[in-house]
Image (cartoon, rainbow, N blue to C red; front, top):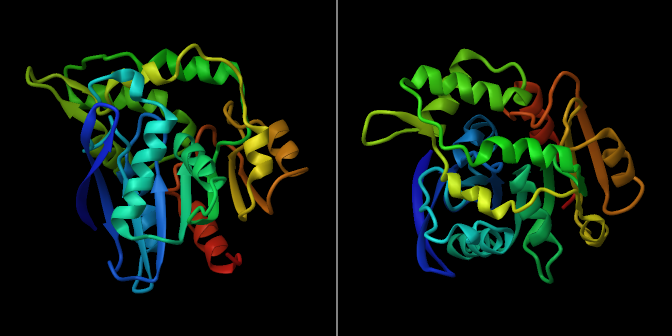
Length: 282
């Protein structure tokens, strides 16, 4: 794994966007993995290690305001146009003209919006627990913790909070939770511990209302693997069923006992993505 960054440009000027890269830099195939709303690219370390090889590189960016990437001076810019702009610049920086996209929640929507653009480089899309409709109640739940800039006395206390808000990920091992804490918590100048993202990202959510993305879904043409946490409140079983009735070629895998969202750290989940990429024509 190698850590890199590049300068993106948008409203407010230049900003540094960080990413982790796995596999051979000159590999013929590129997989881009983009994280959820409050997370970072290192969530994909386990998946990336399994996917990368001599013929494939895996790129895991930190979206602005998360991980090692710069925070935005204007919180209103934490929005999909900004994220799409930065990810398009990432693809240009990588000279990646054809990519497979794996996106968890927000990262999946960024991929969906890019995949319906003319001349898109996205040839296959993995949507991790995100779809064409998002209930208002789920967005309100998420908004309830995203903007809280809580300070904890210890890393252990911050980790317990992290576990409570990410409980939908399923049964992670102690080592996996430690990995999430190492890359998802930060210590402030006074010694307190906080979640690693900019609390200002809440501004991009606005007033939580039900999201309907059916026109975008029906405009999509590339093959899609839809990963579903059966207990998810973000991607409901009803939405999954309706997505199968129209839109692009769709494969669905649902995991019982998992909410929002499958961690993609579990060996069975990793194998599902790896095998789908190996067998699905681009």
